[in-house]
Each structure stands twice: as C-alpha cells, then as structure tokens.
Length: 147
View 1 (cartoon, rainbow, N blue to C red):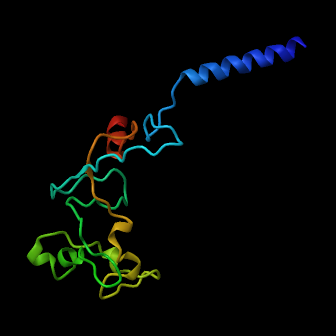
View 2: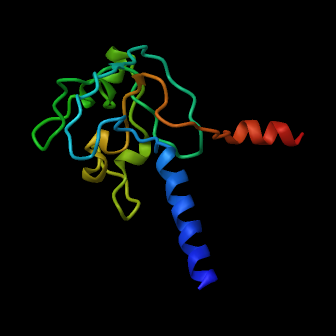
View 3: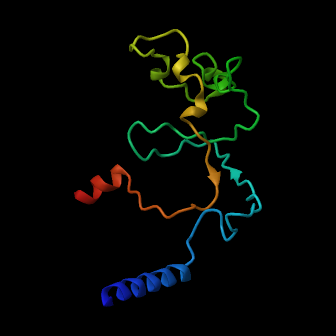
C-alpha cells in the first residue's frame, strides 16, 4: 500500500511540475482549441548575391524574390534568366549541368523533366530570426578546427 501511495504522490508531483512549465511551441500562447492570428509574412531577402553553401550537394538558395514567377507545366520563369542561352544577357548563373541529365545519366539538350520545377529544391531566404536554436557547424569550420 505504501508503494502504491508513493507512486501516486510521485505522479501527482511530476504532473504539477510539468503543468507549471509552459511548453514552448511555434504557435505561441494560443490554446489548441482557438485559431491564433496569422503571423506577418517576413520579407524575402533580395540581395542577388551567391550564398555560401553549408554542405556538399546543397542546392543553392534563390537570392532574389520569386513572387509571381510561373513555374508549371506550361512555363518556367526561372529559365528566362538561368537557361544556357539566357545567361549571356542576364549574367545569371546557368543551371547546373546535372539538371540536363536524365535518370540514366544521359545528357539532354534541355533541362530534364526531373529538374524542371526549381522550387522543389531551391528556396528563397527570408529576413527573419530563427524559429529554433541552431548549432550547425559547416564542414569547413570542422576541418579548420582539426588543424
């Protein structure tokens, strides 16, 4: 009986301690049963500068806004600057040669259908503070610390 009472007391104390600590969530203090106000949309970074990549094979981020860009089966606005022919006039970097390869590794004359929808991998950056802490260390920093 003493063991049973001890377990109940311990459970009650743990529940009280847990209830006293508010759980940090991205939805803020709004209860689950209520609809909170939508957060304001952060500004998109529009610097047109190439950003450092954090790991090998990371798709480059989009350094400009793309609101209103049509990227669907009928058109791809990105290719108006980043296609092989357009880069001479636009001075934008050409899409990677890997985007011209099919699944069998054969090169095509135009962008592969697998790589046609740019925003499947490439994203814009927003001017905002991080939602959660991040202690990521890029590979160059790890290698320089070893020397």
